[in-house]
Length: 355
Image 1 (tube, rainbow, N blue to C red):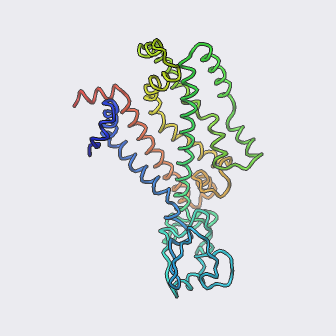
Image 2 (image 1 turned 45 degrees about the vertical axis):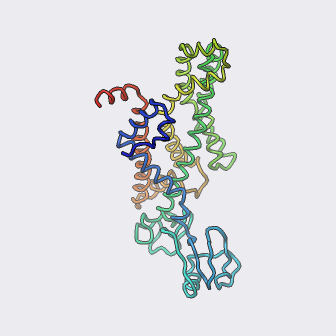
Image 3 (image 1 turned 120 degrees about the vertical axis):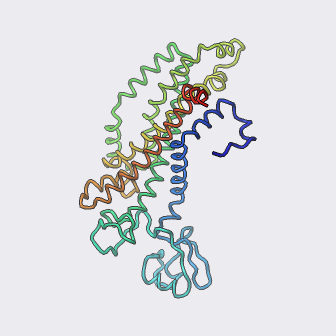
């Protein structure tokens, strides 16, 4: 494996360099991170991969970018001032007669209805739809690509928000201890006893859920798994000698927590991130499967699972949903195991002895 650049390495502590090296030595975790990163980066450009609008249209010497601007049909010799349907045979013939257009790899978006299927929807995989269509005639592969991006963004936002809240609340509890910790624990016990699913059902009947609304609701409870880890680390570190010395020097509690206690507490917390990430994805999938997640029509993997259950005569729906979720979660679990081993001093010391 290539070494880190010397300039960047000089900025890292020896412990950090050992942890990075230990993670990269774990080939399964390292390759899982690379594969997951490539898939996520590709999904960020989903509109450039799966779209019912072409990447570029050249017509009568003029260049058009349909993804950036909606052009009326009259632009390409049509009669209607409405937005151009680039799958209309008349439009295709008109453009090809006096120009050309470059389509995406998959000429369907996640919500594109194919009204020219050769068989009733859901249709089986073929040359036009590599993974078939769902029960509404939408391309399954396009919905998987968009659904993957949606799931990862949801999990990323939820994980970051949970980390911020968990570290903040757990750090205050653990550092100050005493009554602050006691009152905080009692309030957390009451809050964690609330039925999250029932709350979501009630709210879903009042307002129409969307991605950010659902993320905000889940964020109210997802930080509970982080706060215990951070609290335990701060309770352990608050009586160590270097923390006592910092207090004796008159440093403010906020400065001590941020500069001296938090970096050590984050060692155990960081290993929990991939598993929190995995839990966020499975939560979104389960809510969409039950019908309490994203709005109808959203490119959701949970909705694809529900379609597989409701259309047993179309096994490609269930198999695609299972493989998509299985690959995604397996990669995240391997990354989490690699982080856990890299941050565990017992694994690092054993590896150094063997070396």
